[in-house]
Length: 468
Image (cartoon, rainbow, N blue to C red; front, side):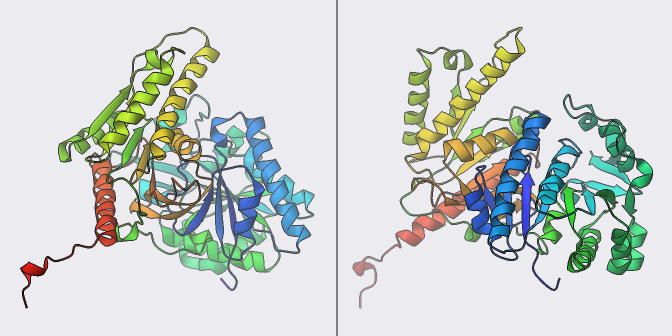
């Protein structure tokens, strides 16, 4: 690229920064910290909107209000506008059409016409790729068209089509025309290179959807190079993508896998850390079991019926906080909520119960955070956002890297309360990693904490051990 590309990434899921490093993440829908990042050429700013968990109209409003404020201020200051990315799940769940359309509408309000939407849902590390316009997910070692997977049966964002053009027609209710869509094929990318891809992109006009085929990062790199050519010609695109395409758009090459030396544990923190579990999927259970085999843990189970008792709840939460803080002097701790089913026939009441239980987990983390644990891991997508923002008070963080290629990110808080500063925070999706992944992550974190303690308190020799 002749000039650095500035990216503003509207991320509909809290775990979306899995494939990138050295980027900023903002956890509040506040334009001020976003502007602090995107005023600087070549920087990438993720904003965690959590919009996949919201109705479409609300998701559109969130995108519209935030981006309007940011772009309006940049234009008033005479600064260039960033490339807008609507980042979502690599299995096609989310407000796939509505959110990028909202971003295009905001750009139109600033006098910028969008030529096309780049649609690139690949997540290479997780075996999600697109070939001949069909999107695949590798499950148990076997590639499957995504329309045949359980992901397609999602209660909110279900679909039947694996061909991405057919998928867009399906999700639009027929308002998008298949014949109006473009496709960047693997042959175009690998034989013609960036020049051939640029020629395809030049055909895009009036918000045309462009399917990006890719089975490797090399494919995505070529498309990003072609996009830079079009941007230099004054053309404008909005990207809707999964995790992988953000990396080449941001000008990053390769992943950063973390060692203890890469992780900063600040001074004055407790010797051990806390794992907060909000995900109850089977993989999480197996990962916890492996963690138990490696180390002695202090485990706290929050009892759901007690949490739903207004009189008993405060004492139950306070007791959990006290016991965890005491334990962190000698061992790592795990906290989760019980699985006892509290039945109700009212969907709204069921949702309120689930929220109340989630809030209790966040309250415990918030209480423990005041005593400065060495580190915190949050297990589960929504849990990771709630724990970071409300439990730890993180408003902005830097993504240091991942513990495995493209998976399980480390946030280093940059705008957070004093008790959170210097405390590494790990975003660990519920259904990600092998059975030893959680134990491996905790091993690295504990080694980083031990290294920090030994550096802060270097061992001194007894004079009698080294007589002159």
